[in-house]
Length: 566
Image (tube, rainbow, N blue to C red; front, side, top):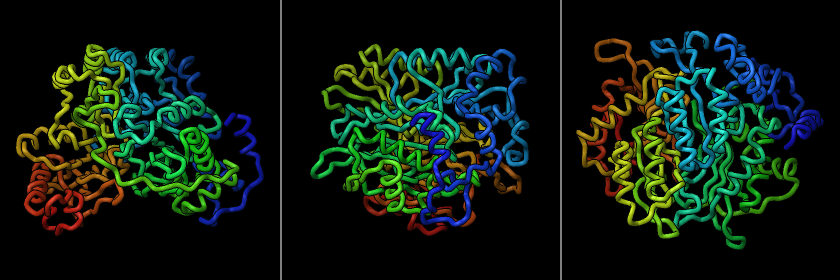
């Protein structure tokens, strides 16, 4: 949609209120154009995309002190930049300090890697940026992004130039925009793939990323596209997802899910019951985004995600509006996807459809570095591969490995600290950024989770049942705590000596898939960060003792007595 089209949308007559809330919620389509909160006023005053010119021409030349506060705390996110947390501020003060008191004069920078796809040249550029400008930091997020820390505003234009030279960008990596598009990391190579969604991802990025018409949404907008039967993009918790299915008459295509999300109000996405071909995905995607832009709730930030509109409308009404007001045609009814097959993280050695192999490896909680990324680029090129992929589980893959080079790649990965045959603890543990850099965090996560992994590997080296341990530093669930076997929400807790210390509220038995469920929260169950390895060990041993044959941890945790979960 062009800027002219956006203007037309802004001035079109108010439409009738679909079923749902009666009072005005700031929905543009119903005539509510007056900004209803500070964030909406900032966006109304100037499109977030416009801040790039000020960064290049003013802020990078005059330094941090020259940055306008509304740009610093708002619009710079449209280009993947957040100020990071000032060192030394304890988690107990997170909620009581103002943003400027929490903020350091350095930035987190998020690089979008749509579909998780990287070439060796792109990986080498990411490594160089890490080493030169980010103090060797680099994290793989569970949304297939690369995140840096310690970025200076003076260096941002140079970093952008380096990224864009190899086809990467930070555009709309954050902010109230269509963020990175998740894709199957084995798209186009997996033997069992239903359909390759890569062309649809590429077309969405080409046509819509950076489009001013779609850059002022009520809140963030998350997308996933995958034709893998393992359903490897967490489609249940994205704003819109396209999941590979086979129509009995039309062949391979996609089923459409809308309105998923976690944070403090977890809601699973709903099927529209529509079958969409590969060629139709960009058009349908745009229609869903435009509905969110026009009908989304803008009054309250904590009620502005698409999941709240979808919960009020329901799938039938949402599809009706999509077809009648945006696509101007009927969508074809289609089948639901079958239950997922296999594990979603693609770790290990797997044969591709062309006879070569891909190798998936697990860094500890997604933490890598410039040195590791450079070594990975060297390793991939040494076996003739130019394709590296990031996963939605903070893991990475090397594609196109000849059969006689598989052992070489596995050995090289281990030397880099990237294990292709990891323990279940290393494989199943994820962590958000946490107190080290995040201004929203209450507890440290990466270090705590990494330490727990190492201790659990020593204590329970033969534990062989899949188990996900997701560690989050605040309630926002960037690490997907509600859908983990063991999900940990950071908060200040009281230890055995009556001291207020960092710790976690415990969620147990969450999962994605055909039986998707939010984990239970046993009453009063909390654990200190220091006691985390002991608690998880105790829980794992009880699971091993009490589980039925082939019973998953999630199923056991949902039926277990609370005393056995303490």
